[in-house]
Image (cartoon, rainbow, N blue to C red; front, top):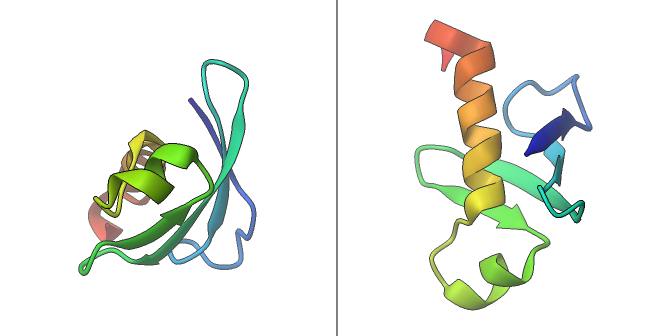
Length: 71
C-alpha cells in the first residue's frame, strides 16, 4: 500500500491517502493513537466495528517507521 501524508504540517494527528494494491484510494484520519481513535473511508472500517482496518494499520506502520523513537 502506498501512503501519502496529506497534511505534513501535522506529523502524527493528520490525514493520509492510502492507495491499495487494487488501485482503490482511501482517506485515513489519525485522531488519537493511545485511545486508538481512527477513521477510514473504506467499507471494512464502516462495517466491522473494530475501529481499525488494513489501511489504518498501514498508516500506523508507516508513521512508526518514519518517526522512530518519537513514536
